[in-house]
Image 1: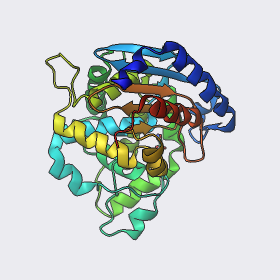
Image 2: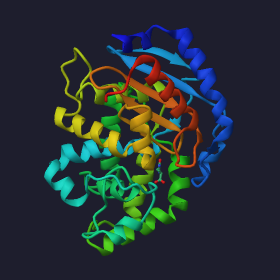
Image 3: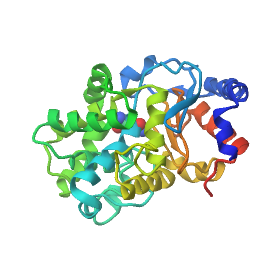
Image 4: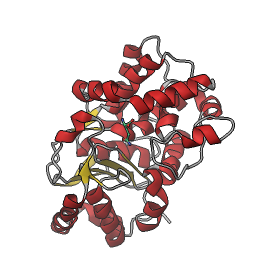
Length: 313
Ligand SMILES: NC(=O)CC[C@H](N)C(=O)O
């Protein structure tokens, strides 16, 4: 199949990375979380995971970055495994918003005021509040265990400095929480929920780890030829669907047309993509476009999709 050439065309991929890298100068590193501002604007790294190994890499693939919004996919998986579809979707919806990820507007104008989907901040905060455990430490450890299984990397942890930096400045996310608490969407102590959420967003990976997570989601929740079903099939399907409809914030429609691969981005500059029944892709390029997606990462994925016919549509 043509997509498997992705694992063989090292020279072509290197050339495509160099081409996409030119766009990094047009983007901007996120600084509303102060600790993120030190990222290297010109970085672009890429890894593909297929058939139980990393098959292609380019750029500085050892560079570590935080998951940020990509963590929303994993907490959704955990909440669905913990309390089931019916309960989760009674408290968070399934529809794209067309608004920026941190917008409060639909919470106020929609009735009932439950968040429209789990990929926007309001929805993700509500999902984080559903993770089971008697303390935040226990909840965080359960989440880290899942990320370690998904990456196959037992040393995964979170970046304390980034978590603290976001916690100290998360005024908008605090507002979303208080609004939801007023309307009975969440019952948590807001500071405690934010502590867990900011740690979740600060889970640290490299491109290879990210590609492995994308691969497991692509392959219905398991590593091919292994026994362990890390995520149930139906949940892996739900995750991919949200990645298509809401994964790239309010650029998801355009991304579906130009690239056509289930994907999720984060403001640290990560993009995780899942080619159904095929490969996982991990990209890190911290220079963002105006909607908060990695500018060079988007260009790279668009180029790859065209060249290797990766669109699922
Ligand atoms: N888009 C993102 O990656 C947002 C995640 C970030 N931690 C926030 O809540 O603002």
